[in-house]
Each structure stands twice: as C-alpha cells, then as structure tokens.
Image 1 (tube, rainbow, N blue to C red):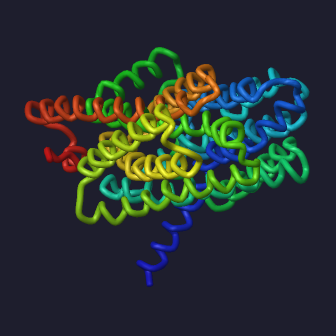
Image 2 (cartoon, helix red, strand yellow):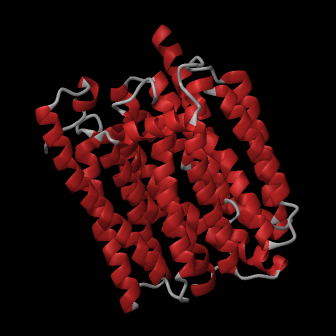
Image 3 (cartoon, rainbow, N blue to C red):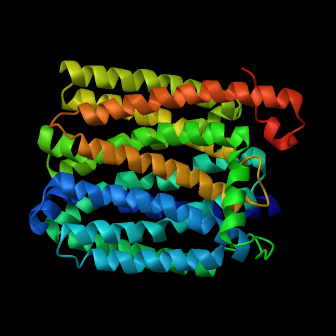
Length: 417
C-alpha cells in the first residue's frame, strides 16, 4: 500500500512538473495558427510576426540564467511564483497590443516568466528522484509536455477563427493562473533556501563556468541543444511552409502539428521502455544517427521537389520521433554530475538549448525564400552537427574518466559502446 501511495504521489508530481515545463511550449505552439490573422490585424507580414517567436526564444534562453541562481539561493517555489506572475501579466498585455513591435517586446517578457517553470521543473527532478531514474522521469515529463503540441495549435486555430487571435493570449493567461494555484497548493518545496549561494555577478558567472567545464555536461548539453534546434527550425518555418506554400487552413495546420507531435510523444515513451535494456548514452547515439539521415532526406527531397505535403509531413514526423529519444537522455546525462547546484546546471542547460533554438529560429525566418529549404536545411544541419558533437565529446569523456576519479553515479551512466 505504501508503494502504491508513493507511486501515485510521484505521478502527481510529474504531472505538475510537466505543466510547469509546458508553459513555454504552449506559448509557442498555441499562437502559430494565428500568424496570418496577427499579420493582417497589425498591418505587417507573417515573417515579421515570426520575429515575436524569435524574441520569445531569446527571452526564455536568457531568463534561465537569472532563475538558476535564484532557485539555488531562495529555494524552488519563491522564484517560481515570480516567474508565473510575470508570464501572466505579459500574456494579458500581448492581447492588447496594436503594433507588431509591441508584440515582439511583450513576447520577450512573456518568455522571461515562462522560463521559471522550465528551470524549476528540471531542478526538482534532480531533487526528487535518483540520478539513475532521471532519464525515465524526463521521458514521462515529455508525455505531459508533449500534449501541448497536440492540443495547443488545434485549440489556437479554433480560438483564432472563432474569437480572434487576441483571445489566444487571454487563454494563456488563464492557464498560467491555474498553474499558479496548483504550484501553491500541491507542489512541495524540494530544496530549502541556501544563503551560501551568492547572487553577486562574479560568483554567479564562476558557478556557471564550473558547471560548463564538466565534459559530461558540455558534451550532452551541446548535443541535446543543437539537435533540439532542429525542432525550433520546424516550429519557425512550419507556419509558412504549410499555410502559405501548401495552402492549408489554420485548423488544418493545427491538426498537422498535432499529428507530427504524436511522433515526439510516442518516441519519448518508447525511450522509457528502451531504458530497461540500454543505457542513455547508447540510445542517444542511435537516435541522433537516425535523425541525421532523416533530416538529410527531408532537405534533399525539398531541394529536388520530390516531397509534396504528405511527404514533408512524413519526414518531419520521423525527425521528431528521433527527438523524443534525444531530449530525455541528453537532459539526464547533462545533470547527472550535479546535486547541490542543480538549479544552476539546469539553468545553463536550458539557456544553451533555448539560445541555440532562438538563433536557428531567427535564421529560418530571415532566410525565408518562399520555399521549404530554410526549414528543412536547418533541420538537417542541426541533426548532423549534434551527432558530430556527440562523437567528439564522448572521446573527451572517456579520456577524462580514464585518468580521473569522477562521481560514481555519473560515470555509471557512461558506456563505451
């Protein structure tokens, strides 16, 4: 009975942590079908509206470096309250804008609030669960987070058509209110405040440097971030590719986005099964290899004109299936060496991931040439680069492990397959 109660408690905690992690993705996915309506209402272009997506990525990247030290200094919940409040306020203001420039700026502040949930949820996973269980827990988190690409674009498409795009942001504000209530009444404080963590710029920068110097961290953080940037290339390019190039409606785009997201969710749950037999390091290697091949075929097919609507959807689906096995393992392997400063490590991990994603999303928007090539080309490049970083980084990890005594829990996850 005690074990059953513990299991139920863990499931409930994972759902809450998943909702915190989903604030950012929901804010990205839900307003994508409204791009044409936003552009028409604000008297601008879809490409210019796409810069509000880039500003969101920049904010959610930079903001994580702020919340990491705060979470280690003041505990997990107080900085979390601050972030959700900022997000809620910015969401309401986004619904009231009259210029695209104001939307771009407010999306930056919305992201600065949303990233608190991303950093806190990863740090709490490290607080609550054994390091050997982290990859499995991250896979379960993806099950919750993965609902957002299925529900959000479809819901956003219907809201945009029925009520107007502004109501998308009112709905996001309502979701943030519900999450804030759930955090306050149901989520435990997983780490007490630690006044030894300095908030002065010098020690904060040094703390981030110390984390990044760890070969296991920078190998898997960079590998995961670069591979995940392929997902952001898809997010940035898909509104134009599907709604302008292939002429699908906002509702149809929402359903396409949902179907593609099923690959991401299904693969993340397959990852949980694979972890019973294989190590995280083995799974991520083969997932990246498959993603590199899929991304290359997607780009080649787009370049030669072999892919129509359904061919493009098929290869993107396969690409995101691979991502479902990359993210949980790269996150777990990156955070494995850290316990006391898990907030700082989580912030650096997320900051790198979102920073690379913001850069790639901006490149896709700026290179818009009225074809699918900017999107497909960046997806292929990200997968191939991530795979290369993994192969080079594994050599550094093995070399260091052979000459130094490192954390036993971290090295247990490293295999030389």
